[in-house]
Image (cartoon, rainbow, N blue to C red):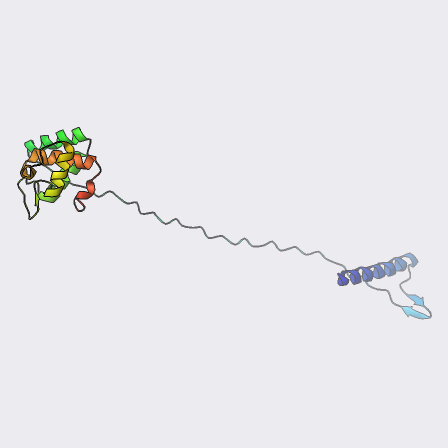
Length: 173
């Protein structure tokens, strides 16, 4: 701010001298006996103000999002007899027929007579689960019925409809 005030004062002095110079037409003046040579006022030439260079902004290249795909499940082909039973009980209990087939295929390779230590039938039911479920259904809880394809499919469809798909943690996916 002080620099601006000094500049303004300096310009006023120069302009005042120039006015006096131009009024008299004399290029030389005397002040108290001394000769003063005229002050040359510098010509100010305006310069172009440089325009800023536009710096390009990098564009963000979108990264593709990986879209998970559904795991394809093969269609399980079963005998005509089993096909009718899967269709009948999936419809009766409102469950996915292909899911029923995949679980049975995974658990027993669609063999109604499959038995391991404590498990039996198409869906490899354990005795306690079979008895408890069949009692809830109001059906015969005889564990020998686990080897009956129709009763096994009916019981599995009932359990899945009740939200117990977790009984088949490896095959119920």
